[in-house]
Length: 118
Image (cartoon, rainbow, N blue to C red; front, side):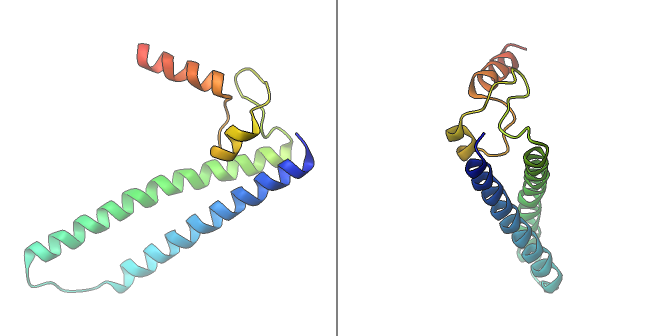
């Protein structure tokens, strides 16, 4: 893969990670500031429900941060953009859509087909 394309993906991945980390820090900050005491149990339950939803989102984002870190490691190792299954180059359009991917579109399609069967 060309160096300028690698730099494009490195920049994209770092920007995504910074945004996710910023959101996570904001969530932690907001939750530590929200020591509101609701006299109404329904209001309290609503707040707890919202917090649980926010934490589920942050957990998914934590997993995405790990995938971003792995993609950045692959960039440094020189294996970024190479399909883990068939070892062919993953298309730039696919990488732009999902830069953390490790499979080309054909291998991913086959994986999803196998998951439906099994």
